[in-house]
Image (cartoon, rainbow, N blue to C red; front, side):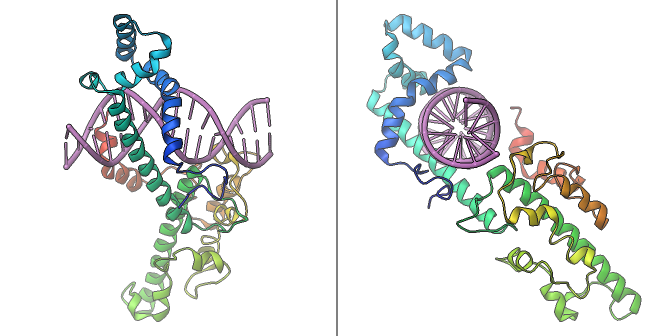
Length: 274
DNA sequence: TAGGCCATCTGGTCCT
DNA sequence: AGGACCAGATGGCCTA
């Protein structure tokens, strides 16, 4: 399944094998030149090898392939090197394809309109919206728990939050598999236990609802200013009207537990000195 | 036409 | 050693 078919019809994300092979041959020179420029050792090796072997500029492609696979593979034939290179490229394509599939899965559960006439969210917009949506749901859940505790705690009917004691509460949370659709498609539905500030303002927040009709502005990544994109200035004021923290990534500092979790769950980032 | 977004290739690094 | 992950480079497509 092509993850980019809705955007481009003339450019498949998984080209034919012949295309890959030709592309490899065509791009090996320019692609490698960029890599060489970033590595002094390789650059010196390139110059040294060229001097030793007496290769001309036209042989740089072959030379690049040899250098690309390090010194212990320099003795391999071009065919073997190309086979290895194609194998590595194929793996990388598959990896990126899987990443796109996961990104599509994330888009499917995000509160924005889906359909052939709606351009899908970009990757960065999907990630930012997902983050905001998680924060919004977390805030809504906490607020709901607090209200339920207040109601049943003060009346003495229940000691605290107890979903099984109230039939309606079992439907208050997102439905697994379609956590968003139920809310996004019925934004005006109020939960009997929730005030409008929670049941409507949070679930149909401007930043969420606005994305249901249009592709996010390119200004999404810029500072929220006068243009006010779908996740722009309107999101800034949501927290003011509801009294809840604004989930916008542009105007809210991530909660401590979020940032601490990110460091825990990503050991490569913490241990990596890149 | 400039800028955004994306796919792909590639080399380096880390992990198993 | 092989695979996964990452980031840089590059070129194509699309939109304002």
